[in-house]
Length: 323
Image (cartoon, rainbow, N blue to C red; front, side, top):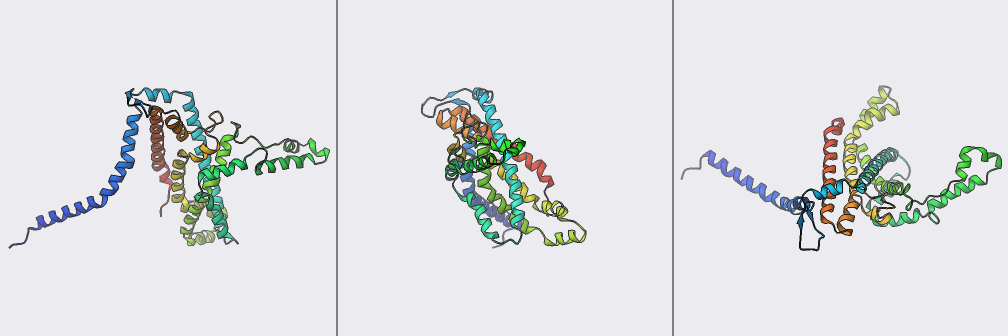
């Protein structure tokens, strides 16, 4: 019996490779289809109907839900709150994380213990952390209130001649604010807690990046007469650029999905001062039982997160040095 032609043997091998590829990728594609693609398609459908999740009647309303949600005053407040929370939280977390990582990268005593302490809040439950910080922010008995009021009392004990100075007079009048019930302070409280919870994660990622920078680059920079700031600007930052880009993308996406801390600490208040997209989605869908408006908010979140990710990949990644 003559052997099969070379072309037929190659064709059979290609089909076997394709079959193996389908067998390997099939389970993952099924999971993505069931838990990612289908929910996205179904949510797009929900955004075009009027339904309360219980009634058997679903009334198609087209783009009316989009018009109702996107033109409402509360939605504009929600967008502004989300933008403020995201920008401030990401900027503070990345800046403080870089500073602490540079510090903990030095041969300091108890360095490993400090790293562990910093990372601990990252693995704790957001709800548990929120409960602890509710006590911390208590304006009468919380530790923060005690510290702030102590500084005010200390300023009052100074001799009368010092009271004429503006800073002393201002310090004597300082009292702990109503962190969680004052619309002017509630967002600041949330940002403080969110940064505290995620700071350790940023520090650990930065430390991993610092370990990968070639030490000979610093030696060459020192030989060329570069000082500490020049080394940081021309060696450390370029070497950390992939890490910073990764942290930027993941931190922005995580801020858009922050929910547990908001739910426990402020419940979106006071007066919608901390109401953000993901919490507004929860209110529309699970509190008010409005499937259509909730679907609209979810679609807006998806589009905004997609746009931000694409913009970061398109413009910021150009400045990343991978070599």
